[in-house]
Image (tube, rainbow, N blue to C red; front, side):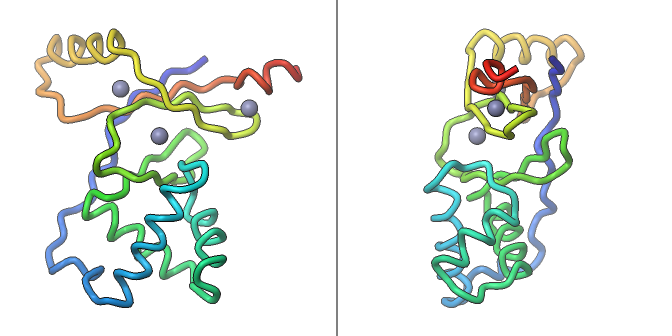
Amino acid sequence: MIIVINMPRKTPPHKKVCDCQGSRRSRRREAILDVLSSGEGHLSAEQVHKAAQKRMPGIGIATVYRALKCLCGCGKVLEFIPSDGVARYEPGGDKPHHDHLICTACGCFTEAVDPEIERLQARLAAKHGYAISGHRLEIYGLCPCCAKKK
Ligand SMILES: [Zn+2]
Ligand SMILES: [Zn+2]
Ligand SMILES: [Zn+2]
């Protein structure tokens, strides 16, 4: 089992006014946020695209990428990149902090948080003189279903 701790990817601050402002854009943005909030979460851009097409036939992948980038910039969506290198997206905003257990066989995500692990990470950062601004903890392995199949 590998434990990877990496910081959330810093999204560069928006220089211009966020371009998700226009009504058509904000409608798309809402729909994409909706896709992320319903369903299983932790979707890749391609999965978001597939789901978004059901609501908005003809929506292009470039539009999805743009909307996701924008939503990440606004802090409404969090982007993280697990060890497979494919960015996943989940609604941010008011969702409380959690860490992820990721199945390397079926790719499912389990959200989990342990106050003690949280505390230990803060302690580790302090030990190295770091003022902590956030963390991501991903634990890779087999989910109970996949472990049973082995
Ligand atoms: Zn955590
Ligand atoms: Zn699994
Ligand atoms: Zn999550």
